[in-house]
Amino acid sequence: MYKVKELADLTGVSVRTLHHYDHIGLLSPEEISANGYRHYSDEQVSRLQQILFFKEMDFSLSEIKRILDDPGFDQEHALRQHKKLLMEKKKRIERMVLSVDRTLDSLQGGEQMTNEERFKPFDREEINKHQQQYEKEVKQRWGNSEAYKESKAKTSQYTDQDWQKIQNESNEIDRQLVKRMDQDPGDAEVQEWIAKKQQHITDYFYTCSDEMFRGLGDMYVNDPRFTKNLDKWKTGYAAFLQKAIRIYCSK
View 1 (cartoon, rainbow, N blue to C red):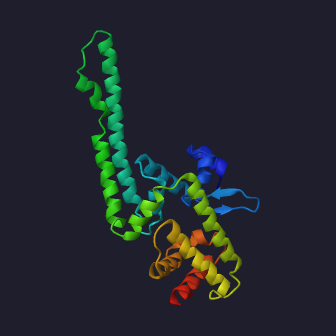
View 2 (view 1 turned 135 degrees about the vertical axis):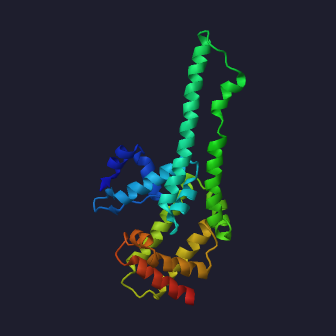
View 3 (view 1 turned 90 degrees about the vertical axis):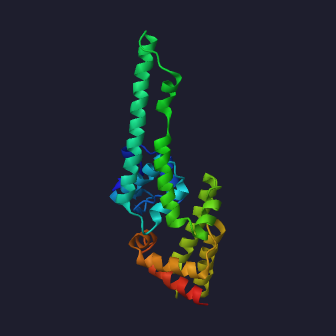
């Protein structure tokens, strides 16, 4: 397990950035100790590597979160795509190094370069081609849904302050629900906070119908990654949420 400062030293990602990733739900610690220390496991280290790879491909943080949180995310396939892009970037850098050598040689009386030769190493055509291909795959997977389009339109406008506000509101809803886990999932107070959870999704991401909300509740239990993340609040929280959401959506 790594403390946040240790993870920052290991990866070169600043502590401030790691805190921001936690606030927006992109990279949360495995656990938070009683004294407030964040602890990250190898699973979070692996996710951070994926985040950095996707950033290298110019994906936004909201897009990266959507991709990594998808139950069908294929890490091996993603790594192969990352490798293709990095190999193209490597070739581009090698061309630029060669161009520098040739330019130095020409300044010292060697063969003169044409203007076309001077700027050819800066060509990003192949890199852009690979990025566009991966973006195409992402859109094919999620892009046809109205929820995806709506979420993309909304989240693309959010500032860091917006993400902080959204995460704070989400955390408060979870805190209030966890406090009521000793009550029946159908209790009026529990149902009131479940309604706020659905509204929070609608307000900030996409119109969350009862059908979609029920599906989310089931995914909280059926997908081990969601269960593990939710149960960080308290063991059994994911199952409690599923029951409460089912009751809410049945009314």
